[in-house]
Length: 427
Image 1 (cartoon, one colour):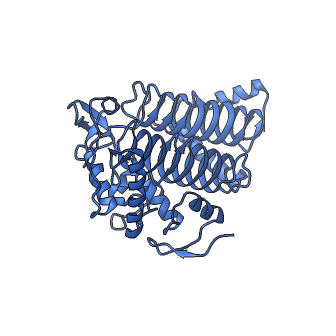
Image 2 (cartoon, rainbow, N blue to C red):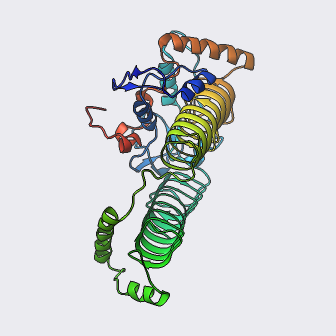
Image 3 (cartoon, rainbow, N blue to C red):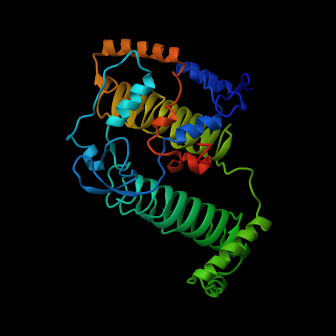
């Protein structure tokens, strides 16, 4: 059962909220959204940069760097290692009770440096972004604990592979989409626990299979037909797999076979309990959720892994009690935030690291009881936060995500453009 039908203030479409979402908003003491799910999702994704790589200099040292930001950003850009150093201090401003909250936060954002790329603990990954604890990765994005991986996107725990999209634990594999725990697998979509195979669709626990679909626990199959080991390798040798043209021909042939012969599931969900959405793995009580693994009670959710009690958010890793947030790792009890790591009990914070009890802050590290980056005694901090919230409520903006003008890249260079294509006029 949904709640009363409302009209989205952005696209004017009708929408309603799930009762469990209404309860969560009350629990988090935040007003219900005024936009439909797609408009909320699009606005949060607009804060997730996905643009070109640029040559520029570090604004702190003058060193030449490769950055996701061009040379004319409205904020300083520091080389990642310099940003995480003690060579600078984040600027702060005093609360101006006569100015709108978001105007002040926008001003602070423009003064505060950002790292030239997202990610830490990397080795030889200068031409990648949003990569964490990786080594020797090139022209790739959204990666965790990968090594020797190139031209890939959203991959975790992968090694020695090229051209992967949304794959975990892939090793020595190529051109795979949505593959998990595979070794030496090529040209595959929706494959798990398999090895030494090529051209697969919707297969589980297969080995030495070629141009196959919907197989479970099989070995030595070609076009879904079984062969002896000797026959299999003799037939495979007849294909000229070292030829680019032949491989391209086989791709087209396999696509047509999959269209005509394969069974197609209604969704790509695996091991879910009372959940709905798509591309869910080991999820419980997740609704209107997409591209999510090992999660519980995540609603209106887009992309993440290992989360609990997260609503209206995108790009969340290993976090709990999260509302209306874009890009977060290891967070707890956060509302209306963007691109933070290891932050707790805070609201309206942007790219903060290891912070607690902060409100309206940008680019802070290891801080507590801060408003607009200025630190206060705990009692004064809590009093000022309550007063600020009342001011924002009177302006009608408390509970809203950051306005589009605060996005750190243009819409066309954000993840929103991949999922919600818009013309320049529409943007």
